[in-house]
Amino acid sequence: MRAALRSELRKLLSTRLWWVLLLAMAAYLVFIGATLGLALALGGDVGESGGAPVLGGVAAATTVYSLVSAIGYVFPLVVGSLAVTTEFRHHTITQTLLAEPRRGVLLAAKLLATVPVGFLYGVVGALAIVLGGAPALAVAGDGAFLTDGDVVQVLLLDVLVTVLWALLGAAFGLLVTQQVAAIVVILAFTQFVEPVVRLALGAVDALAGVAAFLPGAAADALIGASFFGELGSGDLLPRWAGALVLLAYIAGFATIGRLTTLRRDVA
Image (tube, one colour):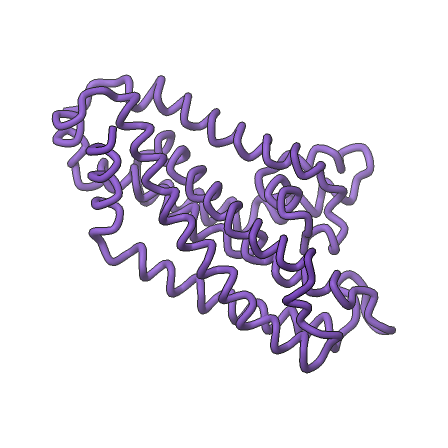
């Protein structure tokens, strides 16, 4: 298992795409953090126009810092999917299975290899959102609150959730092994489908509870702060339930992938 894990981690880090995505995520979160921080400090509530800011203080800070997951989760999802889809794109999966024929071990190694990468993405993401958001909140708002316990907790949970996003990306890559298709689906779902669905379901009282079980909403629940929640996308699950929902997505995708993709013969 140790040799398989070391091999999978080496393969994931041997291309330049992982660090290109990391730099892109950092730049994106710096910009988004500064933009939303200024918007909350100067423009009032994110859900209303005019008047005094409804979101301020620690609430504004946690909303900004939670954007690592709410906005930036596409990056760990994509890099996680690369751990699997790259093998099929370059037709190296045959050699991989010859080196490690135990497919359950291979699955575990591919998932675990994304953990340190996801952790790195989480740390860089948290630093980037602070770099962009903290000065905006400090200069134009009530303060950055970087020593507040709730804020520190959000930043630490940002890192944890980013690891889970990377794991989910790898599990999803087992379902959609065609690399371009997997990336297109991830981009479409994260940037359009889920945000629209969350807002639409949150606007209907009878369906608001359904939105809480979407992966992005579950991640917000685990973090304990939600940008989309401020836009009226419905209530969040308890923190423990959000964690279980994310783990269920990972386990479900990985199990289906093991029973389908990794069960078939590979030429």
